[in-house]
Length: 255
Image 1 (cartoon, rainbow, N blue to C red):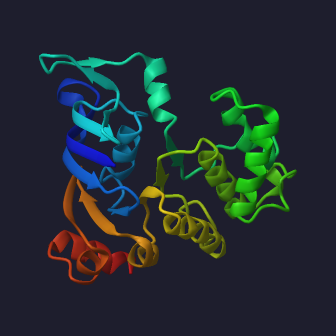
Image 2 (image 1 turned 90 degrees about the horizontal axis):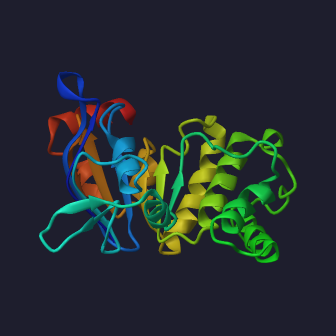
């Protein structure tokens, strides 16, 4: 479903440039859950943002369902940057849930979930409303549809954000530390929704420090450090029998 090859990302230019990704290769199977672990500043979030074209890669390539993201390749193999509208259309196939919820404060939970299908996909308000109600019920918020973000807990807001991403019927869901801004007692309700998504066969890439979630839900675990993938494999191998000293040190601090 996702093929990342030789991806580099440099912020800035020349000697002052910061090399955040240093040649990342990653394969994500359709219907699988890949969890990305790593210390702060290791490039995890940047990798997600490169996959859905929120950041333009410096070198390498990203393909989602066989489609080259952000570029077209001519007959000579030369890459040409796509028009922003075409990139936006590509991005609409990918749902992303951020650490911060980014909900519209002046819209209810229902209106937040309806917004993109109406404005981006041209869905009728009646159809968007019906779909939004179904999704809010799926994330356990059927009794909060008329509440504004300020009237919801952090966990409830994040579940609205997940429903909003699902409203675009994405082929791939990216989660960028979706529980790190939540109070500990609210983490479980968000992880439960993500577990339900995984059981439904949604292809997911999750950046998180929730080792329990990785152990229970992930098909594949990736550990990043200093802009590169240091170790990857099945959860039992990576989490219980890590071969890299840097990963062993990281797990000793988070477990």
